[in-house]
Amino acid sequence: MLPILTLLSLIPSLVFAVPCVQFDTNWDLYAFGGNEDVKLGNSSSWSQPSVTPLSTSGRPPWTGQYTQCLQSQYNNAMYVLGADDSDLSKIYIYNFAEDSWSLQDTSAEPSNLGMSRSASVLDHDTNVIFTLTSGSGASLYQLDLSTIQATAGSSQAWSAVENPSFSTSGYTPVAAEASNHIHYFGVPDTAAGSADLFVVHYAYFQPTPQSYPTLNGGEAFPDSGGQAINVPNEANNAPDQMVFFPNDFSNSYVVTHWTNPGSYNSTSGVPFATDLINTTQILPAPSSQDQQASYAASPTDLVQIDTAGNIYYMTNAISSSYTVQSGASWTKMSYQLVGSGGSGGNTTSSSSSTSMTGGSSSTTGTSGSSETSAGASGSKTSGAASSGTSKSSSSTSGAAGVSASLGRWDLAGVVMTFAAVGGVILL
Ligand SMILES: *[C@@H]1O[C@H](CO)[C@@H](O)[C@H](O)[C@H]1NC(C)=O
Ligand SMILES: *[C@@H]1O[C@H](CO)[C@@H](O)[C@H](O)[C@H]1NC(C)=O
Ligand SMILES: *[C@@H]1O[C@H](CO)[C@@H](O)[C@H](O)[C@H]1NC(C)=O
Ligand SMILES: *[C@@H]1O[C@H](CO)[C@@H](O)[C@H](O)[C@H]1NC(C)=O
Image 1 (cartoon, rainbow, N blue to C red):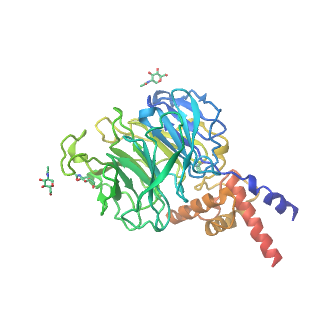
Image 2: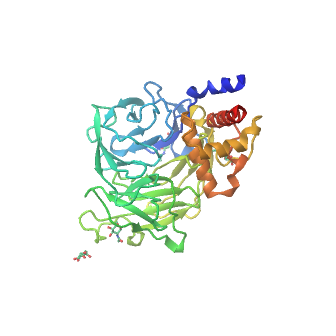
Image 3: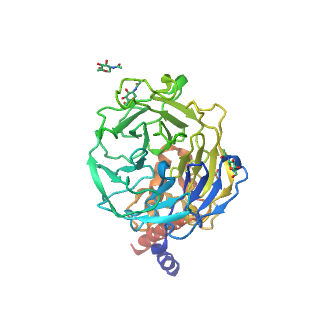
């Protein structure tokens, strides 16, 4: 029993953290949440990145499971949500120009804040964060950061906006914003290729979803969970494009939305060809099929960082005319962000070099079916990742769900397995 007790004693120190990537307004790329945070330069250097460590003073603890790193383009700053698992109301602000961190306190936060890596968006024009909480009866909340710029200021309070026009039962929010409309992808029982919308300027949910047919007869994006980001605008206008990375990794879907702010049915003033309005274009699926990966975009490039800290990029993915480049493809960067954010989470790995493979198959079953049975911070994520993966792909069942490296959440699974075996012995 001693080994079991020894393992159990590790539970409180188990930490699952997820890294993220983001751009500054010069379109230099950064990666956050490993043993260190780093600047990686602009796209011309990604094939041989020059890695510059960032300030560690006041950096987030990076213990969150659903951390989001949102660019505030007006302020050349990044707002980090959910980076401290012990207090999700804290927002860390990174000032790109000064390489400095500050801590923004918030209050009256919704109880189930930030349970998805794409739950929140920052409205470009107003610097207001909108977040849709998870679960049945969830509401939309906002946090007005218009008085907060690249450095934290006085505490700000969250406030409820309204309930969505759709049922949030069973929905894990996947949000991005284009032309002042927040798009909710993967709302249950919405048609493929359609999204539900919240219109920021008029503060209301549209009663029916908007469809985004794929150009050239391409596949519509699925009605499923995933991750989504905005594509920022080079001229610092509100973004008009989003990228949706669904959990089935069928493609990367570039969704273009534009609405004339004065008259919804006028197309006068659209900054691209009118036949691109409310359409989808297809780019290749990300290389790492990690459902908890995070993404960032410059006006032309896309970047992915998976939970193991591997970074992939697609340069010149989107042209200045808002069309996707047909030959664009993902490339793996030689640099990997290692450390606290890179401790595991490879839900698609098929190899297993650990000596504890005896626990492997039951680890997957246990973690997928008993999400709430362990308080360790890693268990919920591993359960969600396991069950989500097995739903979308039969190649990930059994031992395939176990990471090759004995990452921290794997350890949590092993502990749970041992605990289950111990339970059987006691019976
Ligand atoms: C990219 O970074 C390099 C090195 O700092 C710089 O010389 C170059 O001008 C930058 N390119 C762009 C497009 O900003
Ligand atoms: C695009 O979608 C928005 C949101 O539903 C709608 O208001 C607008 O009329 C649509 N534009 C076109 C040209 O279909
Ligand atoms: C927009 O729709 C309204 C109501 O259907 C209509 O009266 C108006 O003429 C339309 N405007 C344009 C520019 O199509
Ligand atoms: C996961 O494992 C697969 C197969 O070994 C590999 O191709 C992929 O790059 C790995 N991804 C991560 C997140 O390490």
